[in-house]
Image (cartoon, rainbow, N blue to C red; front, side, top):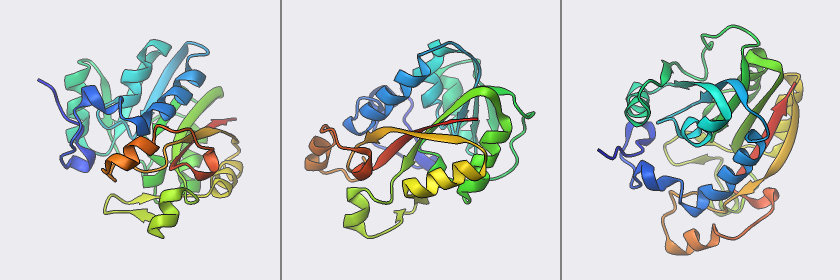
Length: 219
């Protein structure tokens, strides 16, 4: 069986085995792996886990991953891909069912942009992250090339909001988190399926113009 990545429970054209070979994701994955691989983490949270992409990619660098996602269907796929996965069905916008200061590592791939309130989202990260822990997120960039072309803050019907890096840094500061921009990934979303866009996503661009920006948060 080869389950497919099912975004918001809707069919997506890429099988799980191939999605992380898409040029759009490669720089995002490289930056996240580069930071996470610097040590072995204790308890890690795959935030907005979907089918468990982050935990699959980073399983060698954490002793235990917990997956949190609002879609039970997606978490079912996560268990198919990695039997024994510890999954919790919960919205990122509600209270997370964890004790304070419990996670050594929190990873959120393209999930911050689905939060209703970025400051509240960062406050939850701050609450549940250990003092010497790290959170690493990829965030949709309002100043990206695709934002200029679309002239929109929201992408399609997926509720994908984009933020400026000033907004991200301000939300982090209000949540007593330090924020460091690690770099950018891709000019165009993979949902723009033209071959020309796919080729452009192979190029390296600065974070300022990229569709996604990867940031590191620490206390």
